[in-house]
Length: 409
Image 1 (cartoon, one colour):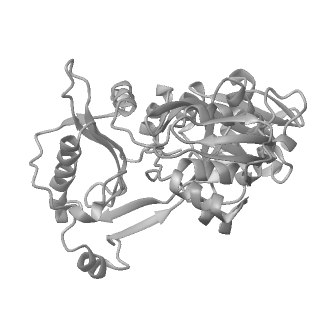
Image 2 (cartoon, helix red, strand yellow):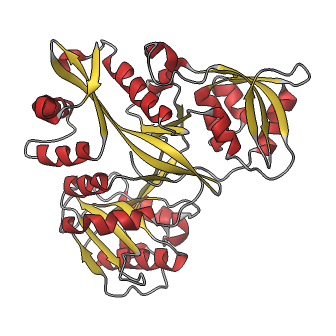
Image 3 (tube, one colour):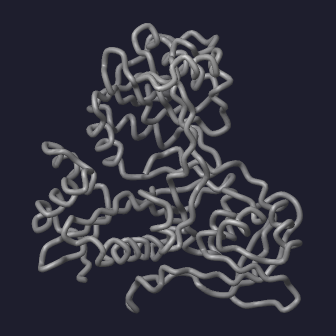
């Protein structure tokens, strides 16, 4: 396998074919794909002299409590029909992650097509994302929405800027290149946005971007929503309610810290009345994203937890190294560390015979560190083990908000 940087002059036709064969685009969407790749680092793997695997990554940040950490997001892993089951995807993805880590990304993340595959590269599953589908006329919002501004595809720069400065909480991610937002807007079927430019210089402060499956009556899907204050969130929900005279169903991801059911009138009744219909009200939970630590000392240095400090040895297994050549810019973080988790956390190579030992895969440790699941739970279902007392101490130490990227990838 030959892996190299994507060359648009040489590889554009092959890249289009890969995405067409995998169903990521339809005919006439190739130009939008080019915009997406323009904002990305793209690597390809050759078979018989032609690109047959394409992996894209972008830089960004991830919020860990009050800290902003450098982040590398794998935004696309695609292999053509003739190159499946040859290890191309794992190899190119591993090298893409290595480039991001070597350039300072403390954490990497991606969206998974199925659980288990990217675990082979050290990624661990995130928490459940809740997506609610409801009749917008049933929203209980006392706020009255003002007349909004229409937002279209030409407003992509303004929309991207609004996404970057939205209210953010633990686990939230920003993907820096504006080309991603532009491409996502262009890909949206019957896409439209509504929002408000309340910034001191007329900046877009709060808005939503929507996909209309059927324009007349829906269902509609809110692809993303940005707001800076709770009042702005409530105004957007009031704006969604105004669609209810015509639209019968809207779906949206539940914002972090909000329980959407609180804003719905008779949610169980609506669910029963609409069951198995085109406009079925429902709540769905899925874990679709994964993350991994790339630099353990770097992440620990940015971890500031309330309460007492827990100290332990960590035997960390990182499987990504076996998919990387010896000359790769980074080869994973397998090793033995002495870790302290508390107000001033740290990790250094070595062992301390006086401390208990935690054994973990990098994916399982990342899940614990992010607060996806507690140590005692991960010891049951994932690759994490240690003395019971240590696991209980870690449970008490890592009492974190449920992490939510708030950016689909």
